[in-house]
Image (tube, rainbow, N blue to C red; front, top):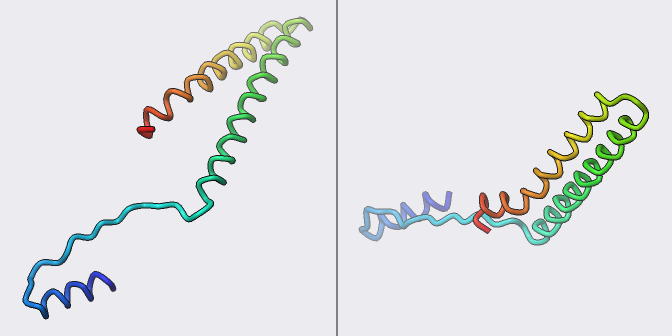
Length: 96
């Protein structure tokens, strides 16, 4: 509606071009900190899961189920590598 009013005003004043519209996305106040806190909690939870998978895999290997244990330990190692790399990947993608 504002664009229509601006266009009508420009036509009435003898101008035929509409003024440029500049839209900048901005989070509402306080949302940025809540989103950051949620991301931090998820990141912490992912590290807990990686640690737990490593412990569970080691336990399975110790109890004789080496095949299952190897899968959990390998998953924990891969998860740890991915989580460690996120501190480099995310800023590179977001330009931060």
